[in-house]
Image (cartoon, rainbow, N blue to C red; front, side, top):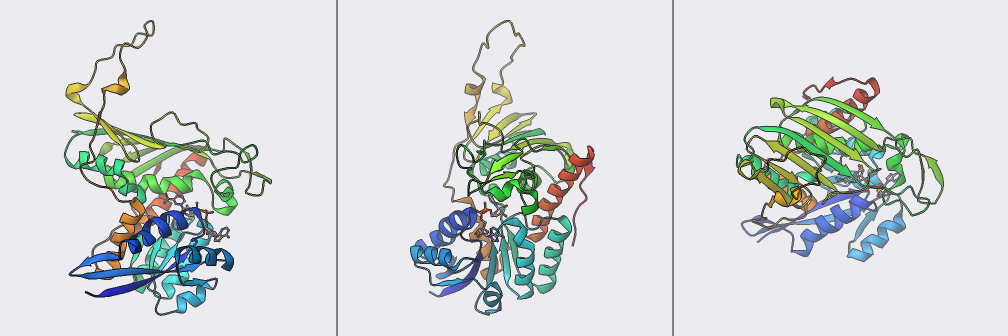
Length: 383
Ligand SMILES: NC(=O)c1ccc[n+]([C@@H]2O[C@H](COP(=O)([O-])OP(=O)(O)OC[C@H]3O[C@@H](n4cnc5c(N)ncnc54)[C@H](O)[C@@H]3O)[C@@H](O)[C@H]2O)c1
C-alpha cells in the first residue's frame, strides 16, 4: 500500500465556505477516514496549506485542526514546487487575479464559483489553464445534493415523459443587520465588492439546468434591490448597491422553460431553502436540498376552480416521497473526491473552468437582459 500526499494551497479558508464546507467537511473529513482510497491499496492524503491575509486567524485554524502549514505569502506558496493544487474560496473579486497567478505557476486549480466577475475574464481563465496544461475544477455542489440526485434519477428513469417546465424558488430573509446581525457577509450586498444575487446564484442555475434539462439558450430577468440600506459586520450602515432579488426566465435546449426566483428578501414558506418543481406529461416532482416528492399522472387529482368553496382536498398530501435508496455524502466532499481522483488518476472530470465560465456568462447576460428589458440569447461558449 502506498500513501501519496497531495499538497493543496487553500486560500480564503477563514471564510464561511472555505472553512466549513471545504476544509472541515471535505478535506479534513477525508483525512479523518484515513485519506482517499484510490484502489489497489493506494491512498491519497490531502495536506492543506492554509493561505490568507491574517496570520493569526490562519494559525488559530491550523492549531484547532492539527495542521502544520500556514502562509500569508501567496506568491511564495505558488513558487513552492511541492504544492500541487491551488484552491480558491476568497471573496469573488479577489479570485481571477489569484487563479491567474496559480495557473502561471503550473498549479492544478480547484475553485469556488463564480470564477470571475465577467464572462471574458472567466473564459480567459479556462484558456490559460488549457494552455498551461493544468487540471481544473469549479465547485458545482448543488449537483451532488440528495434532492437533486433523486431528481436526476427520475429524469434518467424516464419518469416525467416529456418535460415541460421547471419552477425554482430560492431564498430566505437575510437580516438587514441593524436589529439582528445579518447571516451573510456584507460584501454580498455591495456591487463594488463583487456582491449581488445574480452573480452568486445564476452560476448555480446554469449548471443545474444544463446538466439536468438542457443547455440554457435564452435568458430574461427582472433584477432589483429590495433592501437598499443594510448594516455591516461592525454595525455600520451602508448602501446596498448590489441586487438582492432576481426573477429569471430561462429558455432551454429542447423547449423546456425554467423560471427561477432568487431572493434574499423573501420569507420561507416552503419545505426547504431551495425547491424545484418539474412538470412533465407523465408526472411531476418537487426536489429540494434533501427531499424529492413525486406525483404520477395516474395519481393526479382533478381540482375544479371554485372560489366560493373552501379547498376540498389537501394538495400537498397527494405527493409521494422518493426514497433515498443509498447514502449521500456531503456534496462538497463528493465533488472534491472526484477532483482529487482526476488529479491523481487522470479520471475524467467535466466541471471545469469552461463550465464555470458558462455560469458567469449567464449571470452577466441575466444582468444585461434586466437592464435592457430584453430577452437575450446565450451563445455557446468555446475555448
Ligand atoms: N458553492 C456555494 O454554494 C457557495 C455559497 C456561498 C458562497 N460561495 C462563494 O464562495 C466565495 C466565498 O464566500 P463566503 O460566503 O465564504 O465569503 P466570506 O466573506 O465568509 O469569506 C471570504 C474569504 O475571503 C477572504 N478574503 C480575501 N480577500 C478579501 C478581501 N479583499 N476582502 C474580504 N475578504 C477577503 C476572507 O478573509 C475570507 O477568508 C464567494 O466567491 C462566493 O460566491 C459559494
